[in-house]
Image 1 (cartoon, helix red, strand yellow):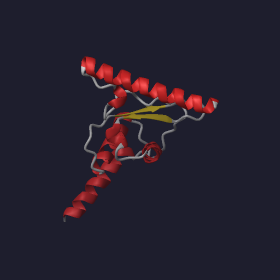
Image 2: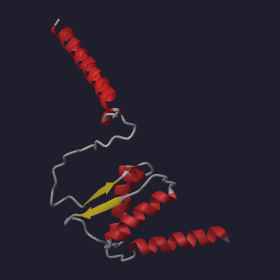
Image 3: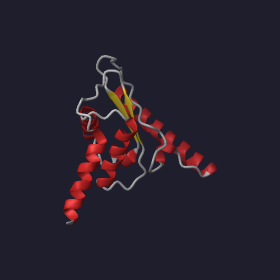
Image 4: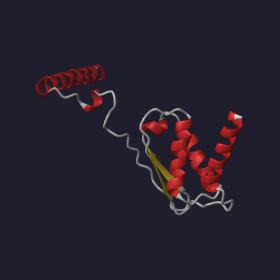
Length: 143
């Protein structure tokens, strides 16, 4: 019986919440954040950091995540660091270029924070070599 009472209380709470939403909606014509198609309420995950192991953090908006998975973006950034790219601005531009090539139609912002544990490869090619290779590929395609 106590389980049924909890369900009823939860049902009452849901009905009460719905009534408050409708009253608020009627009183000021505002749509609550949880009722909007695009929510201004961020997803927040608290993660313990490890100075010895954490390499980088990627902060990006939905224009990035619409076309690239978390795993793929992390792999791309790790590979660019391995290729020897030290310029974080160029690295972020490469993320944006990659998303444009994948037909992202949304606004895009990307920020990469390099942590002390992240090493930069000795190859020294980085983003500029990626751009040269992409331009050469496009030129070959157009011939």
